[in-house]
Image (cartoon, rainbow, N blue to C red; front, side, top):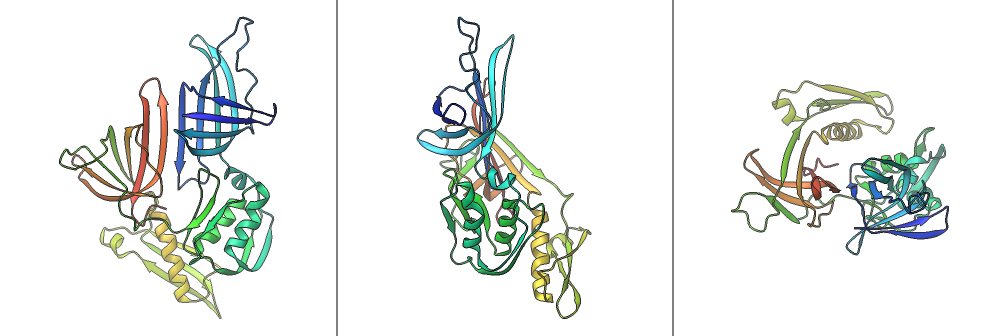
Length: 334
């Protein structure tokens, strides 16, 4: 792992090749990927830290694993300090999509605009130059209303989801709007069952099941020629005994069919994250998000294919290098 820092204050580059600790998370469900790096700041003969006052908030950080860029980001916070254990510098930051997350969008209404054009219009002023929008889903949107308080990212994500796509920023700062790879054959196998061939061995396994946010029924109040209420129920959740209703108003619902489609989307969004697997493996393995993996664990009776929604690269004195992987059921990942 190495880091190239472009200092805005000093107008030069610095290279960080040794980190005492790091925590770098790439996630599909979080708008901006996060990094936390701790480096030593040894004291020289003059009593000053040799790395003191070099790094600052808003510096650009490019993080490499081997020769591949895994995160192109910006520092949010820099803490310098010392104790009996030594002198340290801690840097906390996010990838470049934080620029879209931290800037409020101009309140405005757009008409008859293709999504890819809307994406470029909002993101280009922040230095984004590379975009990929799935042409099959790249439709002309009749009306886009940007409300006061919407961030640039909120606005883009909302319109993207209406078209059936997800939006994310790659490690090379390309913004992608596309469907997720649920149909892809598994790229990895994780198991401690010795009968499973070519499996990556698991150091720790955790399966989380959460029911607090689940709704089995959604009503959508819409307005066509007259006011109506469209209803959608999840038959599988009803069978499991869930009795939890959600009622919303949505101006995009112009008829019963549209209302039912929107109700189904609300219901599915409430299920996302209610079932998640977290596994820890050795840090030497290269794992990517937006891929599927076969997971088999006898202790928790887990056996199936899941979607990789997040990968965290971690190093500390206690455990060495690890990768923490979050997986969710297919079609419920995001």
